[in-house]
Length: 621
Image (cartoon, rainbow, N blue to C red):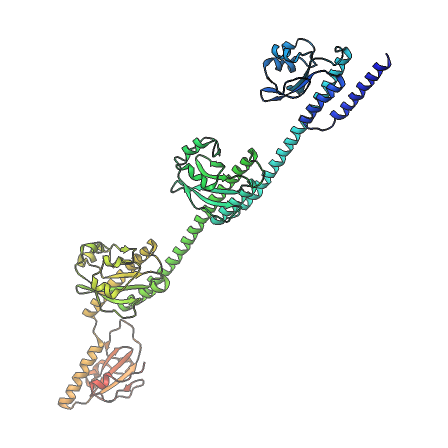
């Protein structure tokens, strides 16, 4: 071997060592492809050469030497696929087995090196030969060695890039899980709907970096998709609106681009162009059995690009948000039901106390007074009156809410007009409008009744058929003209219940008064009549008598006309002789005697011969 060959061999192996040092480092795949072309040309001393790199379904010429073409494309044919499958070395013969004849002729191929990554052809280098001489066995060994070195380096680079990409995806997955965990915990811990919508919108905005983010749910009543959350990071604008859907049934992709999927959006939304108001770029639909909500994203505020992981994160958070909203709605419903139950319990307790007080009333005046006062204090009724029947008219027995006393004013006459015939059957009539009283009363009555915010007319009717057969008309009317706020169905039911509770008590009072008038003697009247007779006897015949009184408490149903024999020591046999008569009423006893008496506890009434003086005497309680 002469000195020139030795130097050439030494140079070639030195270049190979440099290639090994270079290709064992971590470079980008494009850098490895470019430097592989340079090393191959330098070590193998190629004449004309070209580097082709795969771009989709074709190979594009990236670098060249001594070829005149500015650009050249070779399609990725079935022949080129066999370059990897059936040939793992550099090619020096039978080029038409892998390339088309025109390409072989165009580049005058004498040598080709496939650049492979695993079992995929990444590219290749072609040449028309060496600068000087032909390819020797030493050149082929060197080219095969360079090919394996370059391909191994490219495979390592690709695997490292794939590993980095997998790590990035894994980091993104971990971040997404972390974001989902903390966001879901924050969402599920909030039970106020308004605040929950704000939190959800902020979460979507932060994880997506969207400039304008909106969140909406389908209203179960109207079926419209209502925007419940809106955030614009560059302004304080708000958005309130909803979107009408052609149908809630959907089985297509959940991520829609407003431009690419315009046809699908128009088929889904009645007015899809209104999405421009949200500056939406992407729409993420929340779908279970049907559409239950959506999230819209505008362009990002930074250089971030929306990818699949972003949409998966948004979808998961949107589903969690919907669950949180459903829970909040259920919590709100339970809270409302609990408040309603508490209010009903309070109402029943107060109503029970009212009925207990009504049962203790002894007169219709007390009944009307306690009823109206309870409605005013406990139930917030501001303006009401109770009318009792007097002959063929209903007159005011008691009222609240007026500065002037309207007792005795006629409210309605019998028979009822056709509009009030339902009262005959005990039905409570109501009107929720401020001028509702005009339905029930005449203009004259309305003038002194004044204004109100509602009208309720509850008849005081006893449901017993025997009572109705005897007297079909209500005993009275409970009229409410003003409540604390807008009239509700619960308040109408309350007024009706109170009226139904008053009616039997009022009926029994009327029956009791009728029985008392027929069978119970009025002691006050009997006493006055007896005193008048004694005064007349004294005036005509000068027959004297003496009048005494005594404070006492008598049972309510005791016979008020009696002879107190045990207390005074008188007996029945000497009653006529003594001529004493005792009358008891109003917590006092009165004794008319023909003779003076001196008994403990009895006091003389001065001037007994003057009826007016006796009646106006100041009797101690």
